[in-house]
Length: 229
Image 1 (cartoon, one colour):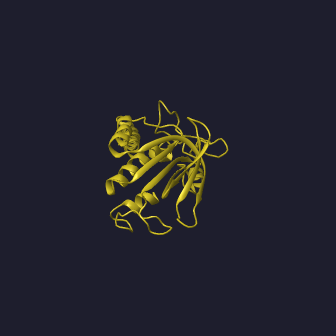
Image 2 (tube, helix red, strand yellow):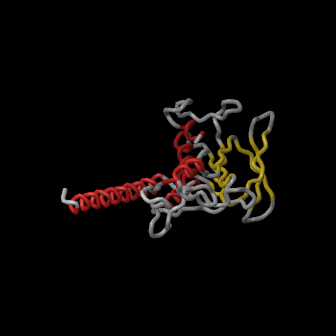
Image 3 (spheres, helix red, strand yellow):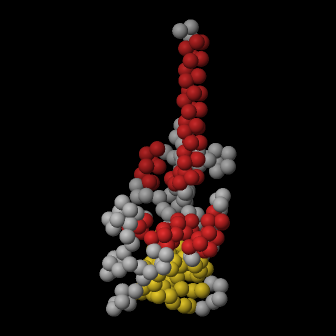
């Protein structure tokens, strides 16, 4: 999010990408996926699902600003699960020169003189520990619930899963229903999710709420009719 703010035309730098160390324009950028996620040693062993596509988009933006920018995405597994996502990644490689490197970075160090960064990684395809010198590193950190979410869940009385996301009554049959009748969930409070899926699920939650209101109104009308009012 910090990177996208920097490269946004309405951001602090007017859309011109500069690194924080010396204000120089980065010509080689590394995007490291799964930072703090998909790791059995952390509390977030799940895949965040959206980061591969966001990193591809961010790399495209850097290339569109300056076509001499080299972009390298360090990934664990490419998650291109949506419609047209796989084609989008292929387009990123073919038209924007993005390099996708299957590897597990373990450390980033800085050269005190040049301010350049060295990404030390385990090459999971060819094997061995290697390093790559880059001008900037963008971290795709784990997608986690916000602070205070557990207090909200306790106030509402709804159940949560092991990772502190709101839990649906049934992921397949009732994905917007919670353990409390009349309280419905949608979007990233349920799991890591992109905008398109969140909007779709939000529409479904609104429809479930409308059904509940209609049922309640119908019962109230029937009760009045039965009492002769």
